[in-house]
Image 1 (cartoon, rainbow, N blue to C red):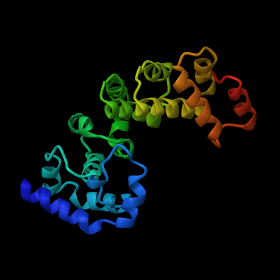
Image 2: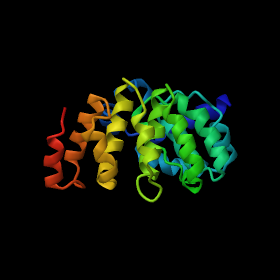
Image 3: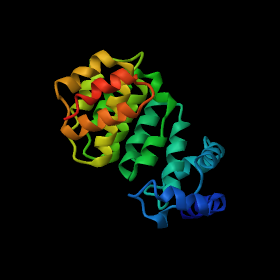
Image 4: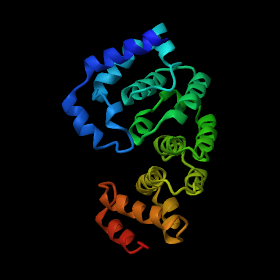
Length: 229
């Protein structure tokens, strides 16, 4: 396993772009610059595709915890290629506690989760109740990506509103969720702002992000401005 870890790290170093590293490190302040190589996302996804379904890729998934930021992202991209629903869930549960930044968390979007909407809704609800910052954030992200249109119900809003956290990256995802939901399910979401059902921080950040969105009309933006606390 050690040889594989060193081989993967060597291949990642060969793909790295030092200039991109300098730029990207500014976007992920919770990650030490020493653990960032600077591999661009499209390049890393292409590398993941060469490993997917191969013994090398399967063994890599067992090498937790990883050392480098790119190793974590590579792990996330490999999880996206898993086609068996239950195995994907199990691997996510193994990996998510090791995620230490918003970018790795938000990059992952396993398509297989959409094949079992009821099971995924239950699992996402479980993730949102986690005390682990990025487990919780990932749960909210799944709800935002898959449950604000054809699978929408009031339960989705309640799950995210119920999250109580002082963690910046959790609260920011809550605000992003409600701003997105406001654009897609206005009638259901507006009472959460009108009746002040969210924390002050999430409430105001939701309004800010909604007013920055091109999916909200100028008139609606003015109405939202009046609801700021």
